[in-house]
Image 1: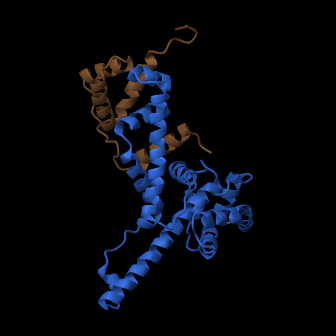
Image 2: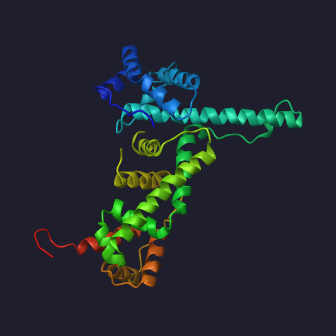
Image 3: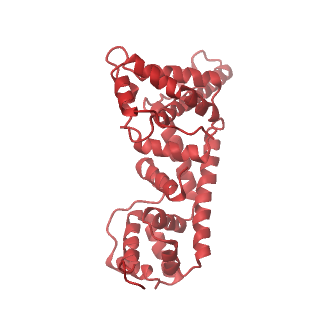
Length: 227
Length: 83
Protein backbone atom coordinates (compact mmCIF):
# COMPACT_ATOMS: atom_id res chain seq x y z
CA UNK A 1 0.00 0.00 0.00
CA UNK A 2 1.34 3.42 -0.91
CA UNK A 3 1.74 6.01 1.84
CA UNK A 4 -1.16 8.48 2.01
CA UNK A 5 -0.76 11.60 -0.09
CA UNK A 6 -0.86 14.67 2.10
CA UNK A 7 -1.51 18.09 0.62
CA UNK A 8 1.34 20.56 0.57
CA UNK A 9 0.75 23.95 2.06
CA UNK A 10 -0.34 26.54 -0.47
CA UNK A 11 0.22 24.26 -3.42
CA UNK A 12 -0.98 26.66 -6.09
CA UNK A 13 1.50 29.35 -5.12
CA UNK A 14 4.31 26.81 -4.89
CA UNK A 15 3.53 25.44 -8.36
CA UNK A 16 3.46 28.96 -9.81
CA UNK A 17 6.84 29.76 -8.30
CA UNK A 18 8.32 26.51 -9.64
CA UNK A 19 6.92 27.21 -13.09
CA UNK A 20 8.75 30.55 -13.00
CA UNK A 21 12.01 28.76 -12.12
CA UNK A 22 12.29 29.79 -8.48
CA UNK A 23 14.96 27.53 -6.89
CA UNK A 24 13.66 28.05 -3.32
CA UNK A 25 10.23 26.86 -4.41
CA UNK A 26 11.72 23.77 -6.01
CA UNK A 27 13.69 23.04 -2.82
CA UNK A 28 10.52 23.46 -0.76
CA UNK A 29 8.58 21.14 -3.06
CA UNK A 30 11.34 18.55 -3.02
CA UNK A 31 11.68 18.69 0.75
CA UNK A 32 7.92 18.38 1.18
CA UNK A 33 7.41 15.24 -0.83
CA UNK A 34 10.62 13.59 -2.02
CA UNK A 35 10.69 10.84 0.59
CA UNK A 36 6.99 10.03 0.22
CA UNK A 37 7.34 9.80 -3.55
CA UNK A 38 10.41 7.56 -3.28
CA UNK A 39 8.46 5.34 -0.88
CA UNK A 40 5.54 5.19 -3.35
CA UNK A 41 7.87 4.06 -6.14
CA UNK A 42 9.48 1.48 -3.83
CA UNK A 43 6.05 0.15 -2.85
CA UNK A 44 5.17 -0.16 -6.54
CA UNK A 45 8.22 -2.33 -7.18
CA UNK A 46 11.04 0.07 -8.09
CA UNK A 47 14.53 -0.41 -6.66
CA UNK A 48 15.90 2.36 -4.47
CA UNK A 49 18.37 3.36 -7.19
CA UNK A 50 15.61 3.53 -9.81
CA UNK A 51 13.39 5.57 -7.49
CA UNK A 52 16.11 8.03 -6.50
CA UNK A 53 17.35 8.46 -10.10
CA UNK A 54 13.84 8.98 -11.46
CA UNK A 55 12.98 11.52 -8.80
CA UNK A 56 16.27 13.40 -9.33
CA UNK A 57 15.45 13.78 -13.04
CA UNK A 58 11.88 14.72 -12.29
CA UNK A 59 12.75 17.47 -9.78
CA UNK A 60 15.04 19.00 -12.38
CA UNK A 61 12.14 19.21 -14.82
CA UNK A 62 9.82 20.94 -12.35
CA UNK A 63 11.50 24.25 -13.22
CA UNK A 64 11.98 25.60 -16.77
CA UNK A 65 15.01 24.18 -18.56
CA UNK A 66 17.45 25.62 -21.07
CA UNK A 67 16.11 26.81 -24.40
CA UNK A 68 12.73 27.92 -23.06
CA UNK A 69 11.88 24.37 -22.11
CA UNK A 70 8.77 24.75 -19.91
CA UNK A 71 8.43 23.34 -16.43
CA UNK A 72 6.86 19.89 -16.25
CA UNK A 73 4.38 21.42 -13.83
CA UNK A 74 2.75 23.30 -16.72
CA UNK A 75 0.88 20.04 -17.29
CA UNK A 76 -0.50 19.97 -13.72
CA UNK A 77 -4.17 20.94 -13.74
CA UNK A 78 -4.40 21.68 -10.01
CA UNK A 79 -7.49 19.48 -9.71
CA UNK A 80 -5.76 16.76 -7.66
CA UNK A 81 -2.98 16.81 -5.06
CA UNK A 82 0.40 17.80 -6.45
CA UNK A 83 2.00 14.85 -4.70
CA UNK A 84 -0.49 12.42 -6.27
CA UNK A 85 0.14 13.98 -9.67
CA UNK A 86 3.93 13.72 -9.37
CA UNK A 87 3.53 10.12 -8.16
CA UNK A 88 1.56 9.36 -11.34
CA UNK A 89 4.19 10.98 -13.58
CA UNK A 90 6.98 9.16 -11.73
CA UNK A 91 5.16 5.81 -11.98
CA UNK A 92 4.66 6.36 -15.71
CA UNK A 93 8.37 7.05 -16.16
CA UNK A 94 9.37 4.06 -14.10
CA UNK A 95 7.13 1.76 -16.18
CA UNK A 96 8.67 3.22 -19.33
CA UNK A 97 12.17 2.62 -17.91
CA UNK A 98 11.40 -1.00 -16.99
CA UNK A 99 9.95 -1.68 -20.43
CA UNK A 100 13.00 -0.20 -22.12
CA UNK A 101 15.20 -2.39 -19.93
CA UNK A 102 13.17 -5.41 -20.99
CA UNK A 103 13.43 -4.35 -24.60
CA UNK A 104 17.20 -4.01 -24.32
CA UNK A 105 17.33 -7.52 -22.84
CA UNK A 106 15.32 -8.86 -25.75
CA UNK A 107 17.59 -7.06 -28.22
CA UNK A 108 20.68 -8.57 -26.58
CA UNK A 109 19.15 -12.02 -26.95
CA UNK A 110 18.25 -11.28 -30.55
CA UNK A 111 21.78 -10.07 -31.24
CA UNK A 112 23.18 -13.23 -29.73
CA UNK A 113 20.77 -15.45 -31.64
CA UNK A 114 21.27 -14.01 -35.11
CA UNK A 115 24.83 -12.80 -34.74
CA UNK A 116 23.91 -9.32 -35.85
CA UNK A 117 25.71 -6.28 -34.46
CA UNK A 118 22.77 -3.88 -34.63
CA UNK A 119 19.44 -5.71 -34.38
CA UNK A 120 17.71 -2.44 -33.49
CA UNK A 121 17.56 -1.65 -37.18
CA UNK A 122 15.41 -4.71 -37.74
CA UNK A 123 12.80 -3.68 -35.19
CA UNK A 124 9.83 -1.43 -35.99
CA UNK A 125 10.14 2.14 -34.77
CA UNK A 126 8.49 2.95 -31.45
CA UNK A 127 6.04 5.82 -31.55
CA UNK A 128 7.17 8.98 -29.75
CA UNK A 129 3.87 9.09 -27.93
CA UNK A 130 4.44 5.66 -26.37
CA UNK A 131 6.52 7.03 -23.50
CA UNK A 132 3.83 9.33 -22.14
CA UNK A 133 1.07 6.81 -22.76
CA UNK A 134 2.68 3.77 -21.15
CA UNK A 135 0.76 4.03 -17.90
CA UNK A 136 -2.57 5.14 -19.35
CA UNK A 137 -2.44 2.30 -21.87
CA UNK A 138 -1.64 -0.18 -19.12
CA UNK A 139 -4.50 1.05 -16.92
CA UNK A 140 -6.93 1.12 -19.84
CA UNK A 141 -6.04 -2.31 -21.19
CA UNK A 142 -6.14 -4.00 -17.78
CA UNK A 143 -9.39 -2.35 -16.78
CA UNK A 144 -10.98 -2.91 -20.19
CA UNK A 145 -10.12 -6.61 -20.07
CA UNK A 146 -11.68 -6.86 -16.60
CA UNK A 147 -14.86 -5.01 -17.65
CA UNK A 148 -15.18 -7.39 -20.60
CA UNK A 149 -15.39 -10.30 -18.15
CA UNK A 150 -18.30 -8.80 -16.20
CA UNK A 151 -21.74 -9.90 -17.47
CA UNK A 152 -23.21 -7.07 -19.53
CA UNK A 153 -26.36 -7.11 -17.37
CA UNK A 154 -24.25 -6.48 -14.25
CA UNK A 155 -22.51 -3.55 -15.93
CA UNK A 156 -25.88 -1.98 -16.71
CA UNK A 157 -26.92 -2.40 -13.07
CA UNK A 158 -23.63 -0.89 -11.85
CA UNK A 159 -24.20 2.15 -14.06
CA UNK A 160 -27.78 2.52 -12.87
CA UNK A 161 -26.76 2.47 -9.21
CA UNK A 162 -23.38 4.20 -9.14
CA UNK A 163 -23.60 6.64 -12.07
CA UNK A 164 -27.34 7.38 -12.18
CA UNK A 165 -27.99 6.97 -8.45
CA UNK A 166 -30.89 4.54 -8.50
CA UNK A 167 -31.38 2.75 -5.21
CA UNK A 168 -31.02 -0.99 -4.90
CA UNK A 169 -34.67 -1.06 -3.82
CA UNK A 170 -35.65 0.48 -7.15
CA UNK A 171 -33.70 -2.25 -8.95
CA UNK A 172 -35.55 -4.84 -6.85
CA UNK A 173 -38.86 -3.44 -8.10
CA UNK A 174 -37.74 -3.33 -11.73
CA UNK A 175 -36.22 -6.79 -11.80
CA UNK A 176 -38.47 -8.67 -9.41
CA UNK A 177 -35.37 -9.93 -7.61
CA UNK A 178 -34.69 -10.05 -3.89
CA UNK A 179 -32.66 -7.23 -2.37
CA UNK A 180 -29.94 -9.70 -1.43
CA UNK A 181 -29.65 -10.90 -5.05
CA UNK A 182 -29.26 -7.34 -6.34
CA UNK A 183 -26.68 -6.58 -3.69
CA UNK A 184 -24.81 -9.83 -4.40
CA UNK A 185 -24.67 -9.18 -8.15
CA UNK A 186 -23.36 -5.64 -7.69
CA UNK A 187 -20.71 -6.76 -5.19
CA UNK A 188 -19.68 -9.69 -7.36
CA UNK A 189 -19.31 -7.42 -10.38
CA UNK A 190 -17.08 -5.00 -8.45
CA UNK A 191 -15.02 -7.90 -7.11
CA UNK A 192 -14.59 -9.27 -10.63
CA UNK A 193 -13.44 -5.89 -11.89
CA UNK A 194 -10.92 -5.55 -9.04
CA UNK A 195 -9.55 -9.09 -9.17
CA UNK A 196 -9.23 -9.31 -12.93
CA UNK A 197 -7.79 -5.82 -13.30
CA UNK A 198 -4.98 -6.65 -10.86
CA UNK A 199 -4.48 -10.01 -12.57
CA UNK A 200 -4.26 -8.34 -15.97
CA UNK A 201 -1.73 -5.85 -14.63
CA UNK A 202 0.47 -8.71 -13.43
CA UNK A 203 0.10 -10.47 -16.74
CA UNK A 204 1.31 -7.38 -18.58
CA UNK A 205 4.03 -6.15 -16.19
CA UNK A 206 4.90 -8.75 -13.55
CA UNK A 207 7.34 -6.42 -11.76
CA UNK A 208 4.66 -3.79 -11.07
CA UNK A 209 3.16 -3.86 -7.58
CA UNK A 210 -0.08 -1.88 -7.47
CA UNK A 211 -2.79 -2.16 -4.87
CA UNK A 212 -6.39 -1.65 -5.95
CA UNK A 213 -6.39 1.76 -4.29
CA UNK A 214 -3.21 2.69 -6.21
CA UNK A 215 -4.94 1.65 -9.42
CA UNK A 216 -8.06 3.71 -8.72
CA UNK A 217 -5.94 6.72 -7.67
CA UNK A 218 -3.91 6.53 -10.90
CA UNK A 219 -7.10 6.37 -13.00
CA UNK A 220 -8.48 9.39 -11.17
CA UNK A 221 -5.29 11.42 -11.53
CA UNK A 222 -5.17 10.68 -15.26
CA UNK A 223 -8.73 11.94 -15.62
CA UNK A 224 -8.46 15.15 -13.67
CA UNK A 225 -4.79 15.89 -13.05
CA UNK A 226 -3.46 16.81 -16.48
CA UNK A 227 -4.13 20.05 -18.31
CA UNK B 1 -10.17 5.62 0.52
CA UNK B 2 -12.82 5.80 -2.19
CA UNK B 3 -16.19 4.15 -1.58
CA UNK B 4 -17.78 1.86 -4.14
CA UNK B 5 -19.75 4.68 -5.76
CA UNK B 6 -16.65 6.80 -6.20
CA UNK B 7 -14.60 3.83 -7.35
CA UNK B 8 -17.03 2.82 -10.08
CA UNK B 9 -17.51 6.44 -11.13
CA UNK B 10 -13.74 6.87 -11.48
CA UNK B 11 -13.26 3.60 -13.38
CA UNK B 12 -16.20 4.09 -15.75
CA UNK B 13 -15.13 7.70 -16.31
CA UNK B 14 -11.59 6.58 -17.07
CA UNK B 15 -12.79 4.05 -19.65
CA UNK B 16 -15.22 6.54 -21.14
CA UNK B 17 -12.36 8.98 -21.64
CA UNK B 18 -9.43 6.73 -22.55
CA UNK B 19 -10.99 3.37 -23.15
CA UNK B 20 -11.81 0.99 -25.88
CA UNK B 21 -15.46 0.16 -26.61
CA UNK B 22 -15.96 -2.45 -23.90
CA UNK B 23 -19.68 -1.88 -23.61
CA UNK B 24 -20.40 -0.68 -27.13
CA UNK B 25 -21.35 2.83 -28.12
CA UNK B 26 -24.04 3.18 -30.71
CA UNK B 27 -25.31 6.72 -30.77
CA UNK B 28 -28.64 6.65 -32.56
CA UNK B 29 -31.87 7.35 -30.69
CA UNK B 30 -33.85 4.39 -29.34
CA UNK B 31 -36.95 3.42 -31.28
CA UNK B 32 -40.38 4.35 -29.91
CA UNK B 33 -41.02 0.72 -29.14
CA UNK B 34 -37.80 0.46 -27.16
CA UNK B 35 -38.61 3.69 -25.31
CA UNK B 36 -41.96 2.09 -24.30
CA UNK B 37 -40.09 -0.99 -23.12
CA UNK B 38 -37.93 1.21 -20.92
CA UNK B 39 -41.05 2.66 -19.28
CA UNK B 40 -42.39 -0.84 -18.70
CA UNK B 41 -39.02 -1.98 -17.38
CA UNK B 42 -38.93 0.93 -14.94
CA UNK B 43 -42.37 -0.10 -13.67
CA UNK B 44 -41.31 -3.73 -13.24
CA UNK B 45 -43.72 -4.87 -15.95
CA UNK B 46 -41.36 -6.85 -18.21
CA UNK B 47 -40.93 -10.60 -18.26
CA UNK B 48 -37.49 -12.06 -17.62
CA UNK B 49 -37.01 -12.66 -21.34
CA UNK B 50 -37.98 -9.09 -22.24
CA UNK B 51 -35.73 -7.71 -19.51
CA UNK B 52 -32.80 -9.70 -20.90
CA UNK B 53 -33.44 -8.24 -24.36
CA UNK B 54 -33.61 -4.70 -23.01
CA UNK B 55 -30.47 -5.19 -20.91
CA UNK B 56 -28.65 -6.54 -23.93
CA UNK B 57 -29.54 -3.46 -25.98
CA UNK B 58 -28.64 -1.16 -23.10
CA UNK B 59 -25.21 -2.73 -22.79
CA UNK B 60 -24.65 -2.02 -26.48
CA UNK B 61 -25.93 1.54 -26.00
CA UNK B 62 -24.76 2.69 -22.56
CA UNK B 63 -25.84 6.23 -23.41
CA UNK B 64 -29.44 5.02 -23.20
CA UNK B 65 -29.09 3.81 -19.61
CA UNK B 66 -29.78 7.30 -18.29
CA UNK B 67 -33.20 7.14 -20.02
CA UNK B 68 -34.09 4.09 -18.00
CA UNK B 69 -32.80 5.84 -14.88
CA UNK B 70 -34.98 8.86 -15.68
CA UNK B 71 -38.06 6.64 -16.05
CA UNK B 72 -37.38 5.07 -12.66
CA UNK B 73 -36.81 8.46 -11.02
CA UNK B 74 -40.07 9.71 -12.51
CA UNK B 75 -41.86 7.08 -10.43
CA UNK B 76 -40.43 8.39 -7.18
CA UNK B 77 -43.02 10.01 -4.92
CA UNK B 78 -42.99 13.80 -4.73
CA UNK B 79 -41.06 15.05 -1.69
CA UNK B 80 -43.44 15.31 1.25
CA UNK B 81 -45.98 12.92 -0.29
CA UNK B 82 -46.13 9.61 1.53
CA UNK B 83 -46.34 6.53 -0.69
